[in-house]
View 1 (tube, helix red, strand yellow):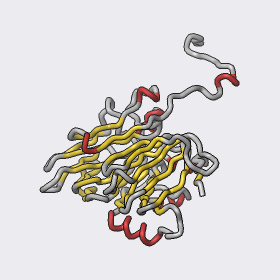
View 2: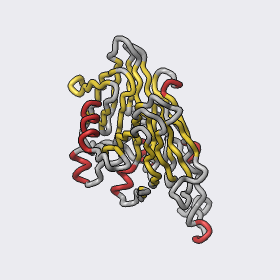
View 3: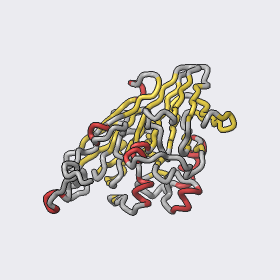
View 4: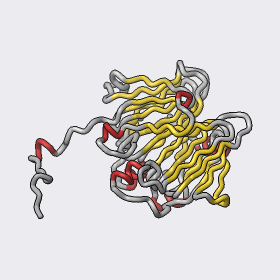
Length: 308
């Protein structure tokens, strides 16, 4: 039965580029979060019913007291925020055991500076195992993408893995070219290597990036949204990111927004904007940008441009 009140049409030239609300600038500090899970939600901007930080990703901070436990249950139909193909946990502070689907055999213990990735699950239990300090985690998944498609993530597309802090430091020192302007390593694995996309999961992309003293990592831009977590910064007054729409004739960002780095704080870099990382001080700083660039690389539309 035809229902013309439901369908609509638009003239092509006036409507081929519809006005969509921009991904917002945003900053959030883990130390400002309540205990439990604090999801960064802009679903009203994207006109969807599920929580979303960006159109494809959901970022959260998890904070647990000593001896506290948190369950992430993906079996509750009213809670779709864990319905994801990819989950990434960066341990900001403390140590914890993470159990998948209630199975002690699937227990992984991780500590400050470690990264754990895991595919779709029915449930995850996170237990603070530190006897002396609270637990802080930066957690990102791609549930907004799966929920936008109206699907359920049921087939694992990569293996659970841990990137230890020591391993990351060793590989950064081993692989970073001292002559390069940018000092960073892309996190990957056998499943994403097979796709040729060099990303931490088929959807998520993660860069372990070092910003040395007296360094400007030159402007670059891409079509993915970056969810940047400052993982080490001892000099917030002199270390910052500049973000803007265009470059001048000298390759500098015109009228940039200035975001100071603060350890344990995340900020959003919207897509398509030029951004540079700047260290005017004398200490090393580190940042962990996470993006949906795995998906965009596979689709051949990431469009990253590096200013030389």
